[in-house]
Amino acid sequence: MSKVHVMDHPLITHKLSIIRDKNTGPKEFRELVNEIATLMAYEVTRDLPLEEVEIETPLRKDKFKMISGKKIGIVPILRAGLGMLDGILKLMPAARVGHIGLYRDPETLEAVEYYCKLPTDIEERELLVIDPMLATGNTALEAIKFIKDRNPKNIKLMVLIAAPEGVEKIQKAHPDIDIWVGALDEKLNDHAYIVPGLGDAGDRLFGTK
Ligand code: URA
Image 1 (cartoon, protein in one colour):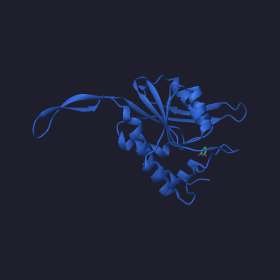
Image 2: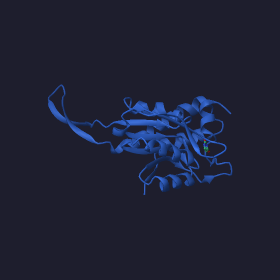
Image 3: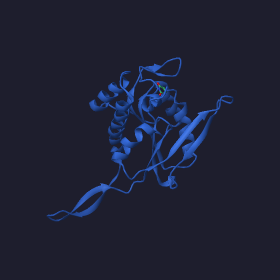
Image 4: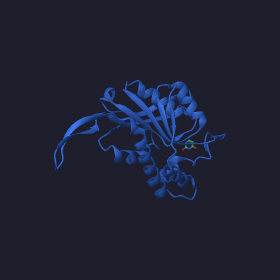
């Protein structure tokens, strides 16, 4: 079974509370989503392997440690996932970025991939799939299925706010994928919004309604 890491850092919790506030406008919302994404990416990358390297300081040569050539890819799920991207690239500016977009066919109710452009060397990469909200889990579940078809080395999922229903769905369908969650909320309402949540993350990021 995959692990669920629920963040307990006060900065993450504090910033999440501000974006939950319905009076927080798009400018501040966008900035904070990126800041939270940076802080969460710090936690998600805790297990990056280090290797010994020789470096000459102004005083002498010595052995030090640096991240060992790990190839990382970040994959925002369109469109709200884009809101977290810059915050993560701040920490990992050399990461490659893929994009995936899905819509639900109104007749078959099947998820249809309308856009998918992933790094060409995906088989050598560890991917971090990002989306602010994990509600029913349907979109993330389908996105991960499509991404897995391209055989990445590993996938991690990072979301700002999750509902227990969504977490459970991903864990059941993809027991190999660990999930990082900024906050685990109470439930979904009848319209599949997370409660208490923050409303529609895409609309709040982009100022649409
Ligand atoms: N997507 C959102 O943006 N918000 C929710 O509460 C659920 C899904």
